[in-house]
Image 1 (cartoon, rainbow, N blue to C red):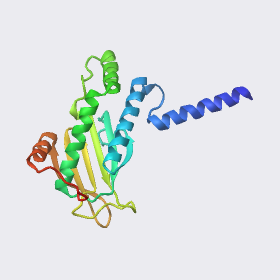
Image 2 (spheres, rainbow, N blue to C red; image 1 turned 180 degrees about the horizontal axis):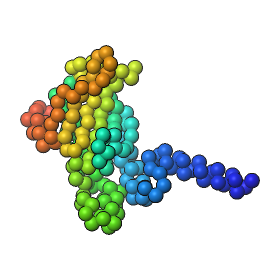
Image 3 (cartoon, helix red, strand yellow; image 1 turned 90 degrees about the vertical axis):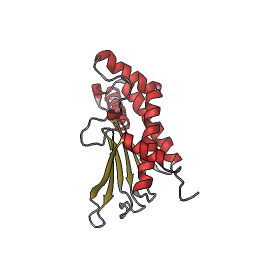
Image 4 (spheres, rainbow, N blue to C red; image 1 turned 60 degrees about the vertical axis):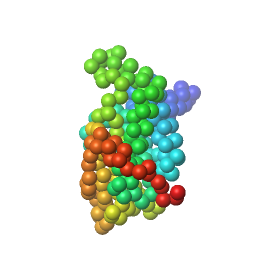
Length: 194
């Protein structure tokens, strides 16, 4: 009876670890678990600062090639020009955090030790970021407001939703460097509450 209880408890703890980290078994190293917790803490902090909701750490892109990825949710109506500035500001801060964070550095060093061809540092193509826009009823915003912003493979993709089906339609895309140029040519972004 005692052994069965311990086995059940161990199974529950392993299941919780799987759910919390998104990892299962040997695929997750200690470095990856620690890094993912750091990314989660960062995601929660940035979401709170920007009146958003943190959703998850992990690759949500079709290519599944993104190592460092966050997803946030916003209820703030956002049009394309403001979305471009929001997106590039968030990704720029995220990349700076990744490149300076000791847990991320330890993760990279771990993989470089096993595989010398593993990229040094945090290359931009390995960074992902998603902001999903939903209203309080979990409906996508209507045009001309954005429904989603996705950053993958060093490119920003901006989507609006069909008002009937809520299906996403790409309205604009731009490489990271173009987004930086656009942002730098604009007046500092002022929120509607200011």
